[in-house]
Image 1 (cartoon, rainbow, N blue to C red):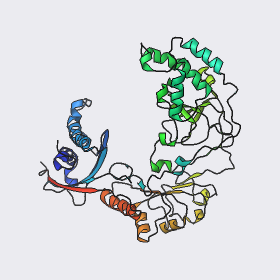
Image 2 (cartoon, rainbow, N blue to C red):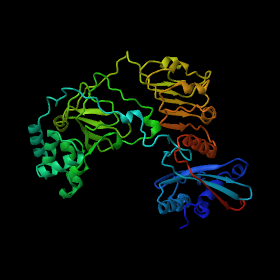
Image 3 (spheres, rainbow, N blue to C red):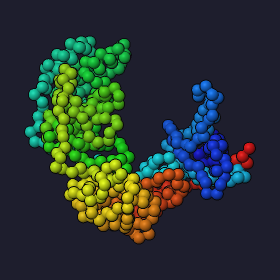
Image 4 (cartoon, rainbow, N blue to C red):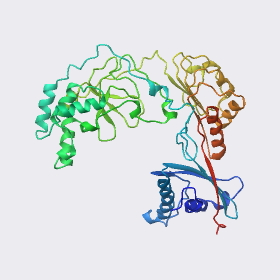
Length: 459
């Protein structure tokens, strides 16, 4: 198999991409770009026209699959997870291919464009750094009843094999936290190992119904802290940790007091919460949605309630006299930057805008503003950004970044940055701009490897 840096590895993919619009792609300055990963790919492949009345068959996509798999095999040989590329074709068939390498300072982006640029090594967005606030006197819910819990579980799954005290102690030592009494009772009744279940799925279903979730074995319990809930810098930087005074659950990314012990069957984690919100109970049961990157939902006031199918109906509400920490100014949300201003503002997002470009003067001096994203062309004077002294994340269009770089006005407080790309822009100038930003902090650049080959004239 040719290596990932051999033109022959890419030739089948390039031929398919050129076939989509050979005349347009042969024009000066035109390009095609994409990304191939070990487990997926993003390519502007041409649509295949099928005979009327016939659906797509496996063989219809075989040529595409084989071409992509050729690149994937070379990725595996190179020990790489993925690679982006840009190709330009001449009318004669001469082809220039640029392979964009990875950098430890750059997160994967959309298609061939770089994602967040990590200007400070190992930096994470503010919401991911937040730890739970201690709630003095938070104790178990009145409904927590280990004795009742054990009786109900033994009645529902009488033949279950329970964990030994040594196994429970080993789990506590691994996690670095003592398991609450109700969770210990649960695992004393069943250790939830597949090898204990002779009939496999039937027993698993009985345990699911008995407990109220898909139960993890003891050696799969984990602390649902921020590190266990990965997310892109661009996404996490747009969130804010907010815990209303009547909240049962703290609005965190993760907590050292969230012990994940199960799944709802749809990818959402079920956890015991030992660091509850102002109106919560220690040991309450919460759910961490796989579709969200921050916060958790109260399921039951105790594990006893979960098993007894007594779901909590308590809901917290944001006080109307507290403006949101995240503000969005665009054609469908706030109508001005001024409308977003208040001392607690942490995130300002300026999106699609049809009016005159906006000034950032109203938010100058706000003590907690840490994230600014601005759709290309929406800022009246991008150099006003230099007056925002607390930014840790900034996303701008290429032209706005160019102005800041030329004026040596890129904020020194930034931990990460992103280049917002709209439309089918050529990736190479965007990558060059990203490398300029990385060079400001002596961070590793995105490598570029150019290959030349010949595909022959278009038939």
